[in-house]
Image (cartoon, rainbow, N blue to C red; front, side):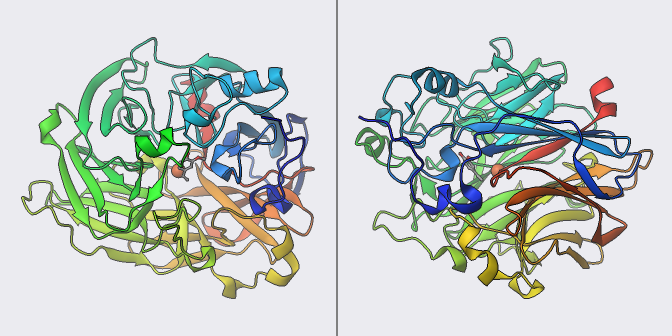
Length: 491
Ligand SMILES: C=Cc1ccc(O)c(OC)c1
Ligand SMILES: [Fe+2]
């Protein structure tokens, strides 16, 4: 197998999606407008960014090496640092000067044998003094929050019982506990789900092993005060297909959307209930909580179509990417019900939206404010001017939304006609405990300058930016990130 010397001429490697391959620091970023003086912390985010050209055909965006960006904000100023996670894959490929890892989550296509295949490219969370770089097929990699240096694979001093760790752990704001799971937890193609809770000091509190009704992707999940919910996408894995060098995932139009419901504490494996709804694609969770009647309220992105269109069904069918719409929907689930079919959810917001973020101090609790990415072409995006630079392989969003779940009013921030937004983070206003009172910060792709920007909004004045911070470089589309306040680091 000869190693390619350049990235392929495909949308996911072109235009704004051309790999960046950059590590470094900028000590003073250019600020337009004003960064409020009370903001003091770091915005960490991760993007898949292949260090070397893949040797397999049409490698999806999701298979790139995890590159961590850290934006430090203090005293109205912003600095920037970026470093790759030194995964086993990254380090061995750097040494070999060529790609060695094959297809997304298919070890049978690798050029060498890996102990851990993680690309650490999906989320970056702060826990117990460390950053954890997450990919749902492996344990976390731990990083130093200041230097972004990789400390190594993190198995919680050997307590981690699962081969896998979700990219979407949840944090209980009252207890500081981290609630997690892994799926395909006993290896590729296994239906085993491992649920676990970790105390703020890193000690495992509880482990429960479950068996899922289908080996499907469980990308995000939801937690309430007394329950956890596991939404399974109808993207299914088959070990024989993997062994033949095929894709890890295949869209299954016959498979329902399952939601597993398990008591959060003290559950036995047989306590899990698998509710089901008609075939649809569950995306990211906004939040979940228990209502006055003890029902579980699950606010989640839902699409009628296969959002991961690059993994088609067995016949090769996939939707036209521009036809895919996801909406924020609300399922109400009675955990004691013996009827396992879910009623139609309520549409909370009509727009095509994803990447919901909340005031995390209200995670697992009843909440009022939801912030998100949305796509509304009528806002004025100049598509003819930017289409050749968009790249592709993922849905795009041109604006930020704020939904008030009490009044159902929506506010929209449109960053400009040549811009697309990445996932935002919410920053509480210092000294204020009011839900949603603070700032929203998002990385923005500017296709006119072919560089990246941070846009900072005050949630009290949502429709215009308080500050726009310019980066001298382009950061390609990323996944998830989190705000780590300086207060949270000290305590
Ligand atoms: C957005 C979802 C998602 C799901 C699985 C992945 O491996 C991933 O990698 C970046 C992203
Ligand atoms: Fe995600």
